[in-house]
Image 1: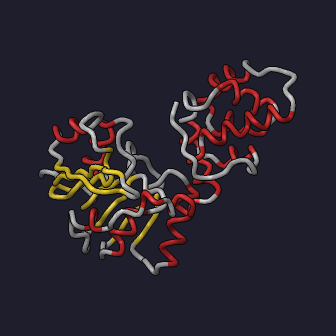
Image 2: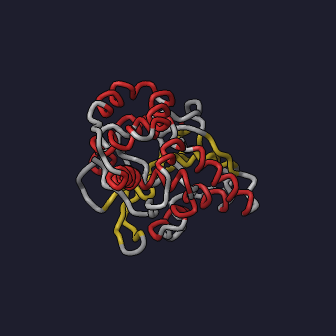
Image 3: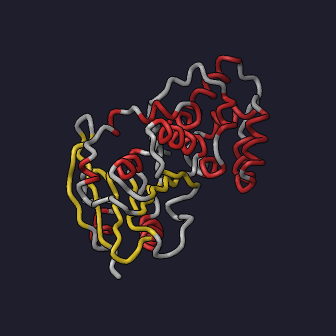
Length: 265
C-alpha cells in the first residue's frame, strides 16, 4: 500500500472527487486503497461505483470483491470516516484533480533550475518532459530556448494547468500531450532530449527502453530528480545502462540523485 501524502485537507471534500479520476489513475487503486473502507464508501456512493466500473471495466472483478466486503448498519459518522480515509490515501491524486496549484507550490519543487539546465544546452532542441505534472522540468527547458517542449502527462487537469501557465508566461514553444513513460506518443529516434522527474522506477527496464526508443542518436535522457540518495532500487540498473549521476539538494534539505546519458548512435 502506497504511503499517502498530506497536501490537501480532504475533510470538506465530497467523495464525488472520485469521479474526476482518469482511467489510468483508477488502474492504480487495487492494492493501494484499504478495501474495507472503500467497500463502505462505495456502498453509499453508487455513482462512484458506477464510475469505477464503466471508466475502467478491467477493474470490475476487483470492484466485485470490494463490494462483497460491504456491511450494513454503519452510521453517518462511520461512513464519512471511511470516505475521508480513501480520499487521504489518494491525497496526491485529489490535488491533481481539484487544485494543481497546490502541487506546483510544494517546497520540494523549489530546487535550483541550474541542476537541470547545467546538464545540457536546451537551445533549439526538441524536448519531452515525461510525467510532466505541473511542468516543473518543461518550463526550465522552454525558458532556456528549446525549439519545442512536449509536456507528456496522463492527467488531463494537469495538462490544462500546464497550458494555462505557459500562456501566462508567454511561452509559445510548449505543448501538452497524453502519454505514459512506458507508452510515449512519438516515433523512434525523434527527440533531442527526453527528461523526467519523480517519475521513473515502477518498471525500470520498460521505462528506460521507451525513453531510449524515442531519443535521437546523440540525444540525451535525463532523470532529475531520479531517486533518493541510495544505491538500492534502480541506481545500479541505471549505472549499468551507462548513466552518469550526481547529487543535489531538493528543498527543504533532501539529498536526491539525478541521472543523465547521451544516447549512442
